[in-house]
Structures are given as C-alpha cells and as structure tokens.
Image 1 (cartoon, rainbow, N blue to C red):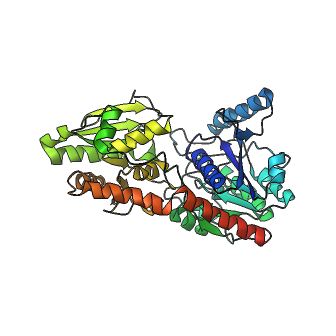
Image 2 (image 1 turned 30 degrees about the horizontal axis):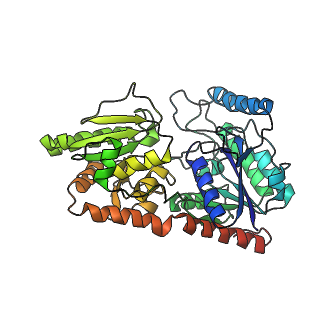
Amino acid sequence: MLKVVHLNTYDGNGGAGRACMRLNRALLSQNIDSKIIVHYKFGNNPDIKTFNRNIIQKSYTAATIILERILAKRFLKPDSRTPFSFTWFGRSVIKHPDVRNADIIHLHWINHGFLDPKHIAGIRKLGKPVVWTFHDSNAFTGGCHVRYTCDHYQQQCGNCPLLINAADDDISHRIWQQKNKAYQQLDFNIITPSLWMQASVKKSSLMRGKAASNIPNTLETDVFKPIDKKKAKSKAGLPTDKFIFLSGFMPSRKDLHKGTQYLLESMELLRLRLGAETDQIELVVFGNRGTENLPGFPFKTSFLGTINNDEKLALHYAAADAFLIPSLEDNLPYTVMESLSCGTPVIAFTTGGIPDMVRHEHSGYLATYRSSESFTDGMEWIIKHPERDKLNQQARQTIMDSFSEEVIAKKHIEVYNQLLNRGGADV
C-alpha cells in the first residue's frame, strides 16, 4: 500500500490546513495509507500527529511562533498588512517514524517556525520523493505570501516594498539566497492548486527547471451540497422572501488583498441602481472578526461570526442566492469552492485562481479586476437572472466535474506513482 505523509504547520487552521486535511481524507477513500503530521496542533483529532511529544516541546513551538511575529515588527513597515514569513526558526522532521516510513513526503504550508530552508534541504537525507503544494507564494519569494504587482521574485528579491530598510541586500534578498541554496540540494515536485499559481512558479527565479503540476484542492461534496433555497433559508433563520448575499471574513478597509473597499463601493452603487428594491436584499457575513470598527453597509446586514461547524456553514452557503468575494489576490479560495458545491453562484473579480472555478455567466460572474462598477454589474446580473435555478445547478456541476474528492485524489496518486516509478525524478 502506498504510504504518504503530509506535513503542514497547523491542523485545519486556515485554507492550507483545510486543504491538507481534505486531501488526506480523499486519499484514504482511495485506499492510500495517508497521514498528517503538524508543527502545532490545535485540535484533538487523534488521527493527526504532531512533532511535539510533550507540553514542553509544544510550549517551545508556540513561543517561536509568537516570537517571530514580535521580531518581525523590527523589519516590516508599520502599515503593512501583507503576510511575511522569516526564517529564524525551524525544526528537523527526518527522525519521525512516519516520515521515515513514508513512500512520499508531501509538504504543504510550512511557515511559522516549521521548515526553514536548512531543514527543507535536510529532507534529502531520506532519499524519498518530495511533493510540495504551494498554497500561496511564499515558497518562491523572499518572504511575502501575497505579491500583488511586485515582480522582484522573478529576480532575487531585495528592495522589498514591505521592509523598513529596503535595499539590494535586505532581509528579503538574504531569505531568497537561503532558499536558493536549499532548493539546489533537494529535488521536489510542485503542485499548484491554480493555473495562476502555476504561471507564477514558471516566472520565479527560485523555481527555474522545476516541474509544476496543476491539481486543484478538493472538498467534502457530501457535506457541501445543495439544499432547496427556501428550506435552507428557513432553517438558517433567514427571510425566505429576500435575496440573500453571503460573504466570508469581513476585514477592515486596511486589509488590502481582501478588497473590502470595492465591496462597500459596489453595494452602494447597487443601492443607487435598485432604489426602493434594495429593501428586498440582505447581506449575511461570516468570519473571524468581531463587529466592532466595521464600516457601514448600505442595506440590512447580519453578522454570524466564526462558524466552526461545516454542516452549519454549508447550510448558509446553500441558503444564499449568491456569494460575494471581492478578493484582489487568491490562489484557489475555499469559500468559492464551498459556495459552488452548495449550488450557489459566485460574484468575484477576475484574479488568481478564481477563474479556474467560476465560469463567467455560467456558474457566477467574473468582474473586471478592481472595478466596483463591474462588481455591481455582477450583483445586478444575478438578482435579475431569469433562470437562477439553472445557475445553481451549473455551480454544483462545476465542482462535481473537476474538484470532487475522487477526481482530485486520483490526480495526486498519478503524480505519486510517476515519482516512484522514476525513482523520485521530477514529473
């Protein structure tokens, strides 16, 4: 039986953690011996293992995660909201029995003091094929996780716009050098969840000569599934006679890559266009930020807070008439996939990996990048669409055809077998 071990910083905390756990479940359903080991374990799932054998080791791990955030303030500009990881802390993974016994080592999101370049290179001692799924851009940059328009990763980083003391030889360039040295010592095979990420990898100076296969993430289509809209609204405590927009994680205006300002502008434009009809619309927001210091919304808005139960989350997706995501850069956001799987069309900007999932005017609406006017067009389009039931069906079918657990598991197994048959050589 093929043995795969997945390494991720956290157990289900964030999109990468969820992607790792969902892939693990999909592989298990295909009779693969698949295991997850994490750097820091939040939950109590006995099937997820950790490198921390006791409370002292777990406390040390937590301390390094916190310390990195504190030290980072000495280097990053005070107004920077872009995630950035340094390489001050790391740990070896090669002595763990499940890592040593695996046929394939599959890396996922490995920041926050987990696998620094030195310890990534150290995996070569095991002589096993290594697969690495890029859930964001950090693996091929000098530290940032979100690049926007910066193209320094195509050279050797340096002069980083996020740093206080940007220079040719700043810390982003030195991190680039550390990664470059490590990557020359270890062959690994890249998986990108989106075509956008695959194209970025090909432009990266750190990834030249390395193969990148495009395989999307998956999700539990038996949990995230359609329910009759009226029944779902009633069960969720939402008005059955209103058009419900759903949106996830409502950040402040300062969180650039989430695009809040565009959502606010678009909703205001929609209010002006619809006039009195705006009373028939309600916005529902879920996410991990409180309702204090939030901007005002032009029509009735309800805040659900964090939803930790997938069945409850799926119910709200199914109840919504459309999902709004104004993100300005995203690899393959799970909120989009979850919404479509529940038969709810998506309104989004044409950015990142979102066009891999949303087909324009088929399963949603792809607005012109950074255009509030175009985003409003999308909202108005879905409100006035004469065949919304058909759109809902097309949204669900998109997921079943291309992102279901069986489809994605088999694509990964194909990559694993190719590596083993070629003795670990690049795909």
